[in-house]
Amino acid sequence: MKNSIADRVVYFLSGYPPFNMLNEKSLHKIAAQVQIIYLEKGDAVFEKGDAYHNDFYIVRDGAIYLYHTNENDKNIIGINDTGDIFGLRALITKENYKLSAVANEESIVYAIPIEVFESVTNNIVKINKYLITSFASNAYDPYTAEEYNEIFVDYIPNKSSDIANFQTAHFTTKPITCKPSKTLQYAANKMCKHDISCIIVVDENKHPIGIISNNDIKNKIATGLYPITTKVSNIMSAPVITDKENITVANAQLKMIQHSVSHICITKDGTPNSKLTGILTHHDILVTQGNNPSVILKDVRRAKRTRYLRIARLKANTLLKSYLEQNIPLTHILKVISSINDAVTERAIYLSIKKMKTPPPVAFSWISIGSQGRQEQLLFTDQDNALIFEDVPKHNYNTVKTYFIELSKHVTKTLNIIGFEYCKADMMASNPEWCKSISEWKTQFSNWILNPDEKSILLSSIFFDYNHIYGDKTLVDRLTDNIFETVGDSSRFYSILANDAMKSPPPLGFFKQFLVEQNGEHKDLFNIKSRALMPLIDAARVLVLSKKIKNVNSTYQRFEKLAELEENNKELFLSCSYAFKALLKFKTKQGILHENSGKFIELSTLTKEEQLKLKRCFKPIKEIQESLKLRFNTSNSIL
Image 1: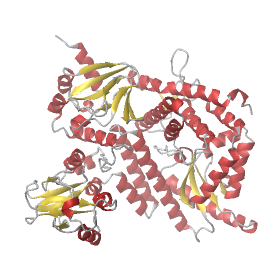
Image 2: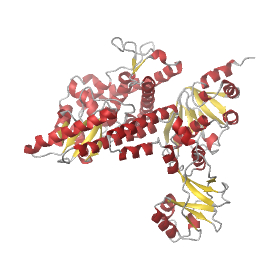
Image 3: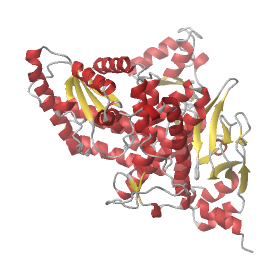
Image 4: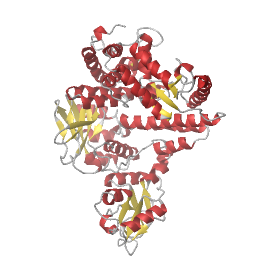
């Protein structure tokens, strides 16, 4: 008799990784054993400290929050939505749960039996890669990073990296060693002499029995727990993790995660009972993978020509696509891509200065504005930037400004060649209007704040999101201090900003249908940027300004900071943070899929699950706009 429930489970699983990598027969074998769990809001799947289950989980409907709890507080670490997997600790490390998983609304979760899953996925490379990466990314949070020595696995699922991941790992063949009777001072001097991060402790037969790393020295010697004259046998980490000389990169990564280490000792027979022949480090793995954030950043910082910068930035696009396919948390993606974007811009400025006939005449700061200023620029989009230079005597002003405009033209041209389009509104440092002295910038912001009009509010929404990239940061700090001093308690300015943040109503109509464009070239398309992302971006901006919060620019971090400050509104702010990340991730995926900005979406191309997931993200928009209306009395914000 046909099992219709199992068929529905198979249909659902086939749409999400890693199950979409399995054939139908394997999926049916899993589905036949899946337990369907129905949860009310507040129900726990598991709690911190619980013994690991014999299942891991995937969300069918609803949302499961992951919490870190202690005696006094409960903090959200992540939110799992439809298609997200969680509870991988049981599959990878066989340890008690470090977090609690609790339903935030009515939810349905599929419990996947580990034994059945492993029986059908044994030796399937892509699935092992996906699960290891998912676990590593979940482990990389403030509560487990130290425990896992901040090991993070960056997989790039393309042909070249697949070859790299499953080839024999390259390791150091002449590791530096010492005897257990030696003092820590002796070992540290030896590490310093050879410029290495660890030293292997071996017995008289040269079998590895322990390891001393920089972390051991920091945690056990620098803290005063042991004197520098103590024997290495007293503080070495033991036993060591070992493997054979033919270990692959993928297996090495798995072993490092499973055992929470960043070094593997290579021995003759792969056990600690044979002669040490080498040492494999996490850094060795990163170098082998090549298309990795660390390697890309090194390529950027070494680039001597624009075309090499372009090649490095294109690698970041491949990395971005890989991260999205593997469902890596957006917070990690934003940090990685933003770091690469900033490094590319910094190098473009450095190379442009080299093209100038003379060095900069005075101190200056290059700032990114808009999405890059908020560190939310994932795809190649328009470049938005500005330049601040130190005040100079009046008779030198024109000469200095002319220099920086010429420099800015070199920079914006370089960025354009790399792939960042010129700003259509010319909001770039090459425009004299956005290349000014620090005093002029202070006056400019003061005018926007004290004499707000429609244009100044529009510019405020762009220029209040800025980030220092290159040069003298103190200029930016001085500007920031002046802005907050000028804003003060200007309720009218906040009210106008809040009113602007509500110019786009929640994206659903009366009958819960999407509000789409009514005319023009984008007729019947959904504008996810203006209707969903911008209301959250604008709301976060006015709220942090009103709270005098400095140096927190990204939208999700602004909401998380607000959640810390206002316990009564914590749930709303965290919901806004989550909604923003989910919407930005969705927009980015659409942009990659259609090779555009992802701004306009053809709703008919979305699955029902995708549409439901989008609609769930719209709820916080309505709530935060209602909050702004009450908080800033927007009815009195007429210009």
